[in-house]
Image 1 (cartoon, one colour):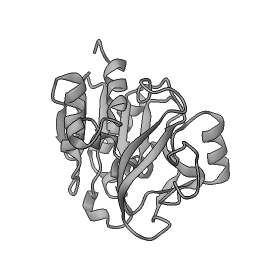
Image 2 (cartoon, rainbow, N blue to C red; image 1 turned 90 degrees about the horizontal axis):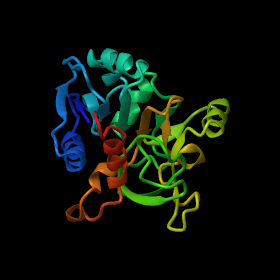
Image 3 (cartoon, rainbow, N blue to C red; image 1 turned 120 degrees about the vertical axis):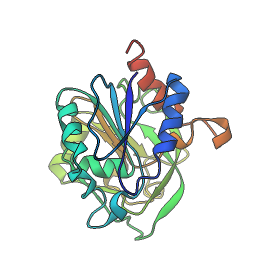
Length: 231
């Protein structure tokens, strides 16, 4: 698998993603700055978390206008796989690669804690190592992670199986208490119609080794490595 990680001014989770990808592939991903061009032959592009451009204006709005995002849009249009985590999810939405919006957390406070997610769509390049309904733990660290979309968009996401992850409690139930940021329908992550673009707010890359406190997030990166095993 040939992967690239894109950084913007204010990105701070690129090393975490790099560790996760190298663990499952044994090779370093390509590290790119927002003024670079995407190299040829990539299988995966990752937009990591952080505070691109200081989260001024709207989170991800300025990064979505960075030169490299033209390449990312073209890459996605050609069927390339793109993963956006936290601020990366915000950038994907602002760039029009995923629908909806990410609002201020319902508490109006920055959230830094573990959450639990349930896998709503298995069998994709991002989720094949989980079964549908499996739950896993992941850290969250965001102030604007409250996913919102209009009812028609939400119904389409649900009807087409494009909700990837949902916030749940320890029993695997999508309760209000488990939904710390207030996301509509407990949505934690979504997929594009072709299942090749995925965005989520929590950070699975921060639980890929026992030294990190667990390996709950490892299946996402194992799924990606398996999808491109011959690449």
